[in-house]
Length: 182
Length: 182
DNA sequence: ATATTATCGAACACACCGTTCATTATCTAA
DNA sequence: TTAGATAATGAACGGTGTGTTCGATAATAT
Image 1 (cartoon, rainbow over the protein chains, first blue to last red):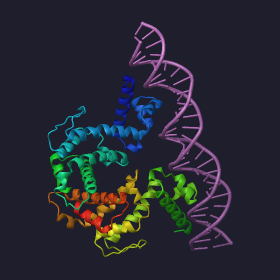
Image 2: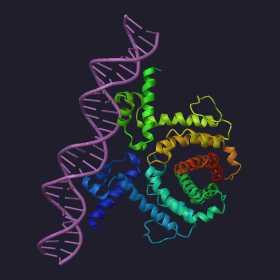
Image 3: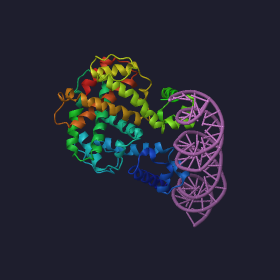
Image 4: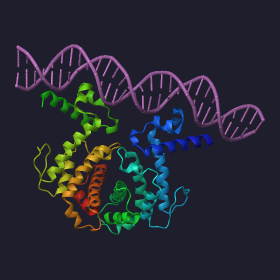
């Protein structure tokens, strides 16, 4: 990939995450992004079809890494610090607490449908892998897909609750709540 | 209230729910609403500050009724059919299945943050009332507000799962899944 | 019957979107 | 190192939707 492309791409990503830390996704305009990134309007659209695609790519970068790291698939570069040998979900909570990237604010924000969809998609993948561990505790009458959905949703709600509270609790406590709830 | 006001208000509500059954909330424009409602632009804004406020009022009408009916508080008019003596959550599922009003499509749609917030707010109210029934089954270490949040979220996710599946299952089965999951 | 109040309709300024294009800068491969 | 390819620039454009304004008109209440 051309160095010029990499540079503008990074500039846009940086400007975007910076803006995300200040205001709602829905309130952010392409105008603002390109101004902060110091990039031409046409250039932005040469890289991303719309604002939504920008978010999608950002999320994919983050979630894919987090979940794959949690699964012990170390094929991705480690931009984030993490300790791979903790139990999976604890690892996730730690990871989220360590390198927030301002993305978690999306969880408690207003117009974050897209963000949550991407997050949930990755969590479903994870829940699928970890399913036996939960099936053991739960009633066998529950349909498999229902259970997967439930685990993913409960995880997200737990994170949301945690974030709204300012992430004061240590990951060890939160993961305990998660396991007690789910 | 002036009969004219009631008429336009109803016209707008009708046009809006009609549109909701066809397309995403985010894709609906004020333009479309007033055209379908056959109402002047200025008139719309005389009634509702924005599109979001319109949704809010619609949701409040529906959810307040449903939850209050479920709680046995019969102070509201009964626009919807319902059988008040079933257990609360079963009652809710039945209610949702009976008079969909196209609102449930919002649960599985794309840009429904607002709708979900209103729904969840009402469900928290309900969960608060029903809390003892759940606390008995759950570990006492779980913080009260965490548990309330968890119940509300699990209910919504259950409904969402049900709706996405075409609401094929009878309310009795769904409520069983809900109780097994939560 | 009259004063009030809602609606109309047309226009307005505004904000943002996504695209186009000619020009300039930067890269890559020979 | 140079020639050809590729990317970024900047300015402008048409389009769509928003929310507001205002005088004129029609329905309502008392």
